[in-house]
Length: 478
Image: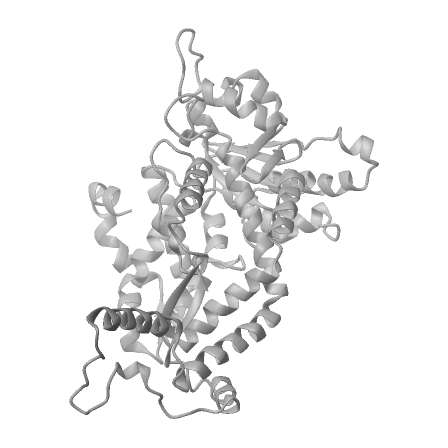
């Protein structure tokens, strides 16, 4: 962050987003001010709060993308939420504090992944040693964990029956897995493992429950927050010891290596330190993008409770202005989180928000509607333009896609025309039109491996003409 000036942040955003210079400039300044604040004495630093931003503009012009991209540039925890998903406290629905809960989870994932990457090499070595141990035991006839448990149960049944286990027809007693298979030297196993010769061999390993995805079996019950559900499950597991910490799995060596490496890496990472660093990141560099703020603005309700509008605004207010939110990981201060609000404000205006919330978004920027030239640049000029994405996807099938200039002009014109005649959804309309144009090419791509396919203006017209002839049909298709 300290190496990026506001101008450099804008230049980085220009690589992915067309136009909207005012919004890019406002966000770049807000982020640079965070770095400036960190250079100040502690007593002054506490009093400087972020200048939250309110973006005003129609859908599909880049509001969300600006916030998402800039958070990636500075490696900050980022979350996008819709204001309409929340309800006033006391009503059924999501409370606004869940914004902070989700932001913490994002930060924990970021920090945890970084720590795992740091210990990856050591974890792979430890996992390899464990895997060789499992293979050595099982390939030299020593019973694996599951086999030992099976043998104990059979022994108990034999004792209860008062006799030996009956012999098989070949005169050999017991189960086949009790008998040794050809012996392998440890050095041979290491060599075979390195050469991936054992990748498809099945092996029994012991792994922690968290490596097996058991948590995914338990959904959040209605009416409970994720934090409350987690606590309920933990209390249940502790009281009844319903789930042991280890489970035996029979998987391929390749999968076993992945599972064991993940488990060893998790052992090497101090999760308490991960949580502390994640909370610090949230408090000092978190970014929250609140979309659809215009949907909760409007005429004030004089009597009764406005569950979806003013009530939500009043619940948002303490979080935006700065408060302490109690999470499952401890208290989190929201004083220095950057909040970026956004909305089209077609039927309402920013002044329809409650005055207290208006004051917490002092920076207002209006984003312009995109025109044909903007659409052409979105198709071709950015680093991850739609045409480049389509070309890369088809290249995986061995098909080289060439889109001529007149085809790009025609696609941009059609997208603008449809936006003017129907609901204006901005640049998102380009995706609809482009997918319609490339539908047959994408469908037949495997049969044309090694070929070059050219899309020109005539081809675009032939693909789009049947839809554009009928306004009714266009409304359904485009």
